[in-house]
Picture 1 (cartoon, helix red, strand yellow):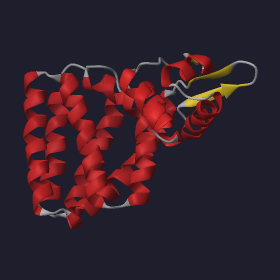
Picture 2 (cartoon, rainbow, N blue to C red; picture 1 turned 60 degrees about the horizontal axis):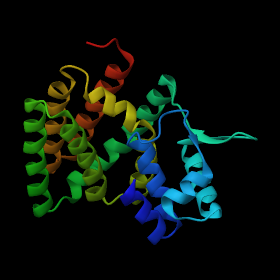
Picture 3 (tube, one colour; picture 1 turned 90 degrees about the vertical axis):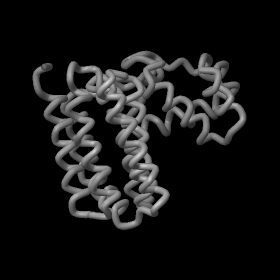
Picture 4 (spheres, rainbow, N blue to C red; picture 1 turned 135 degrees about the vertical axis):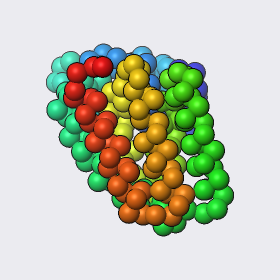
Length: 218
């Protein structure tokens, strides 16, 4: 929590919100765990008002729920909600992939091809934590390359709510080996500057994520 605390202390209120959001997404706080305001104030060297404002924003994002007389806790996401979020993400991710294919520069093409190699290698070697981190990096870079600020902002909020479920999926036996070629196909379409293919490969990949999330474990 040290790095998150420095961010909350030194930066503007948005930095405190980001620090608490990261702690939730990365599992430092478990689903249904209480978020005690004095503890957060001490951890982030922040005022009670700043912590309350951050928790209010995270409530709006769906990561936190507040109950009268009981305070705030990490919101537990149901399977139905996770599927709905992934369905909404599908449209936005497909849009960003298509826009990225239209706008990608030559240096960005080289960057994505290097990321492609790293993803495939991590999956093949069973380095699942690294694979999950590379997957999140790919999602972020496609959003950034797309230049679509509205879709990118919406996706950042939606992804934060389901990243824990996707992290667990990455550790299902054989899951990384199946999803890595799908990520590679998205990258291939983007670097080929083929918007239609980038959109189609993205939709196919997220349909597979939904199937893996709702189906029985392998």
